[in-house]
Length: 75
Image (cartoon, rainbow, N blue to C red; front, side, top):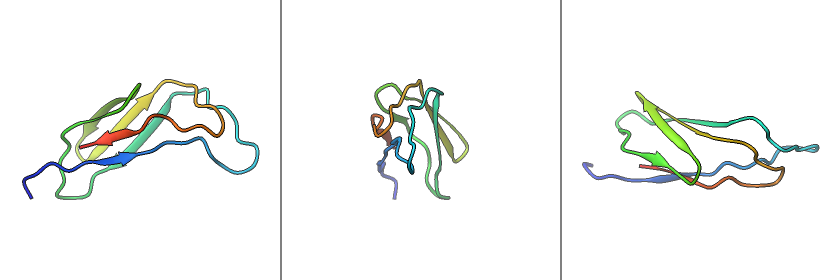
């Protein structure tokens, strides 16, 4: 209570057979649980903002098949 906490969001291009390179902007949205407030979010190459409890981060493509984007740290 009354202290900042943080957690990490990891985005990877891993799906079933036939995974392909992602050539569209990568968008991640996370909704904070009631009682938590947004302080900041970011990671290498990510642009993040919040609207109410929804935090949205966007990163330009590409994300090759089998690769992981840099982590997003959400405070």
